[in-house]
Length: 198
Image 1 (cartoon, helix red, strand yellow):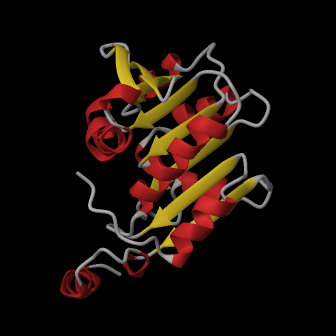
Image 2: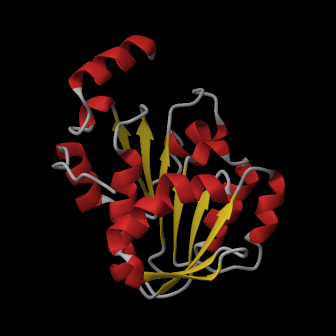
């Protein structure tokens, strides 16, 4: 169960202003990227354009653990139902959502022929590039948006080069989060982790 804390100023900025086609949260571990992305996604489910939606994780199991369990706790059991869990088909807040893992190139075929009105991508830098490229081409409903979160990776990673820092993509917004943007963390824990990571 989530123990809610006040949102940081950066989180509030993301929640209020993530209105681009591609909205990216990246940065350090434990910086509240996932929960902020999940709250924004729930708002999008209610206000976004009509049509099927998708949620992607490295695997279906990590998507369940990292994202869906918290979302189910937030909305309550009356507001979600697995139509076909094996196929990843879910009804969430009266919207049809397809959930799947993207841990190899074969996942790209799961997207072919689909049309989506929105997407949630958890730990997007762990996917093959072909999967994410295909997903972006499937967001063809007018007003469709994608919300991505990820931890740091190499500055030469395809997602950093082709999406985060690519000046040709102007319909995007990017937020960089640090542990200081998560007010729920114990200060001693933050200090210890800062000593471990650069």
